[in-house]
Image (cartoon, rainbow, N blue to C red; front, side, top):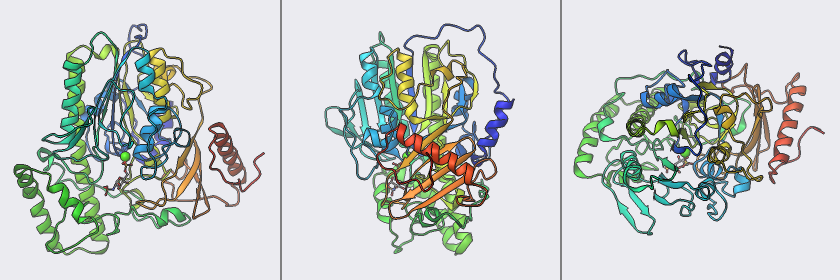
Length: 530
Ligand code: SGN
Ligand code: CA
């Protein structure tokens, strides 16, 4: 169980659990790996491992997501390259870092759809490709035989979809159900059953502002979630962390109307109108159900007259409950897809991937949102059910990153991986192999500043023990964390006596990564690393 013990240490920041049911056991009677397996790639938005019970049992239960991990593999060191939606999607499609694929920021970039992506390579290799749901790359999809996407972030209720014809339609219902319905319809009636397929089911859930399906509204109302240990972080020694705008306590950052659903007559808040616009999408039955749920909560809130820490902690509970309700719908819908594949005997020749565009803060450091290279948002959940002949089972502890998905899918399809792809295929890991030369550090670069939530631009490198970050642009700060002794990254030890050697080692890794990936944005290294 050494492997699990290691994972417990490295995952301590997110309460990563060891799963006793998992082990190094291989599937019985190994079979030849399926050639050109189908790929069902389910991705959600802002779903973090803390809120997935196969990773973390502190908060909620996600039985269907856990089925994937229990029958397949759970990656315990899965990371993104740039913790934001559009950038993550571009990294996944291309297998390249943001500076290489050109989509660095949701707010300032558009995706160049003429560049090579894994769906295009798969099409050439004989696959049928389809995507339904969130796309968020500001240009229309290319490389798909069939697509239907929501514009931008999409709406939870009665959402608009953009069709291939260029027309838009509004579908009645709740988005997570609708994306699943559409995907199952394609699987059932529309695809060419003589070809292998790659189906991307990409959800808006669990994105802000966490609007639950009406049937899930009552869930978790009796649950009181424990505050993370560093909820009242003072950000000492971490200037960029001090200056962010993603704090649960702040009335500006977490809006009482938009985020917490508290509408008080005559009370204007920064985002109240946006929430009212969302409510105006609901039909009368949906709205009646909604108000029946939130009206008593609003009344109790007004009676309580909270302020200071009690108000902040009340906001935390609302945030956790609403987020958890949205996860419940997502988990149920993933279950529908798994049931479909099982009932149609497709699990033997299908790779099922479940991941998110990045992790998220559930009150750690006092935050919601993502963006930082700190563990909660640098990590992303990743579990897979494997087709026949891929013998890994249980935990996979090697460091993987979202630029690895594209080369992995190409490898599975028998396509030679183009030399300009920066990620690496994880197929050897899926076969249960333990490659001696697997990467032992990862590169990260966040570009979106100035922007919403005010997280400064930064890049950095992480190995299994340390993380080095440089915040730049209108700030010039270095941070170094000892991940073994300070897994929640509260103590910046950069520049402290005794850290010279590890600083030099990490700085050298950073330089190597920036050279290897040819990142044009790099500043002078403050110490000599040659
Ligand atoms: C929206 C949200 C932000 C969020 C970004 C990026 N604001 O702008 O809170 O950080 O998306 O999220 S909201 O008022 O529109 O809800 S991402 O996951 O799509 O990158
Ligand atoms: Ca996201």
